[in-house]
Length: 344
Image (cartoon, rainbow, N blue to C red; front, side):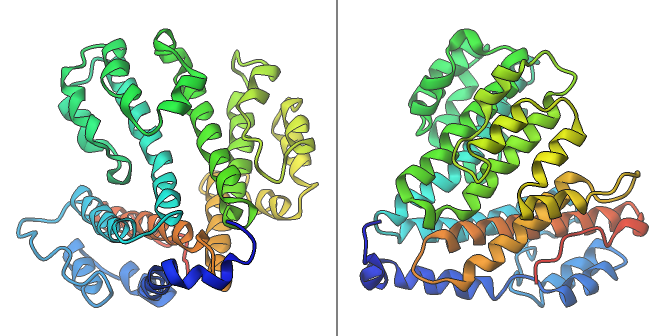
């Protein structure tokens, strides 16, 4: 956005920014999670959620509640809110909101490719796709019986077409390269947000880029992926670029990755919080906790689009928390029921 745009921000985007800040006030608090964790059954969980901003979102479920039903309804509520934002947004906010959905679209497409490679029925795969990443062409997957048809029927016509054209061809659709495809697509989509909307709009995206660089490095150990190929997968729009990415590309084990993180205060704290034993905090959990803190802080500033990205990510974490507690209640495994990540 050009200079001095803050003077005119509220003309087009003030209503939606005020709305998303109001929605943020309805995010579950630590007290809510304490009450949820004390529930004995999923029906108790449903009753408590009715006292929050979720209201009667499960009111139409007359049969026994299941985890999958709760998960689907949570995602459906988030999707309804997100569609309201996007349908009432002016440019360039509308484009920014579209970019938020791209990572979910990538996950959905990779899921469809993987399932097709394993001869899974398309009708079984589509319900597993995240609703934020759904697109009209997904209905066409019913005619695809192999990866080549999947590419021709879906990928070419999606908003992600430009990203796919840069990093894969029909011959690449085999099981061996699926994760490489995923990371190339993430790299292209995350960096595009930074290029188009600038640094001020993409603090969380910079963190996402760095997180992917760390995860790619750790997951590549013990595989056939060379150091040069690994470096090509790193998003180049985070704080690690360029020196940190070069150090990660030459890392040979987890301890060397941890040494790279020590050069960056926020990532040093993330790695220090990781436990070494079973049942202790994982690196993924530590990254989620740091992401929550960053997204909460995004609301301290005004006149920027980052609050919309932050809200979606906070609600996504809230959904994970509720599903985790519901899983523990359903399986009567209460010893780990408090292993959620509180937001406020």
